[in-house]
Length: 143
Image 1 (cartoon, one colour):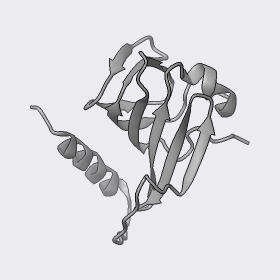
Image 2 (image 1 turned 120 degrees about the vertical axis):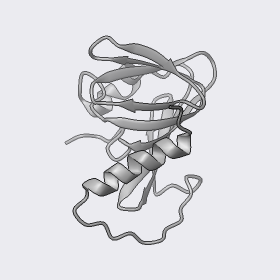
Image 3 (image 1 turned 120 degrees about the horizontal axis):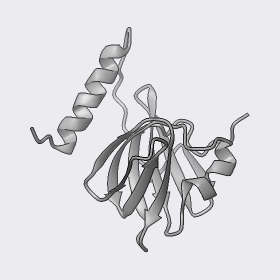
């Protein structure tokens, strides 16, 4: 069964809400064009908004960006430990899981990544992803 991005995100968010013991939702409206926080790192940045008892991030990776080169020194871990649930807007992002699984995600793709991976930009186009799960601590100095 093919699901649209809207259906996938709705299904994911519905499951997340069901796991919460009690959710009090209020109407909110924010834009990633005016983020609550911007985290800069070599060859990219993360724009973060706090909304709906969570955080959503727009991650931008420039050509030449690689997690193990550009974010690993900030995270202080061997591989990315942030799980992600992402919609890919632009560019091509190669992802290698610690178990050796490897694939390339591009515009229109949705990825669900558990902890334990590396990633890098493929080609000369910047990568832009929206991350509904994993933005909270992404590229945040630990300690």
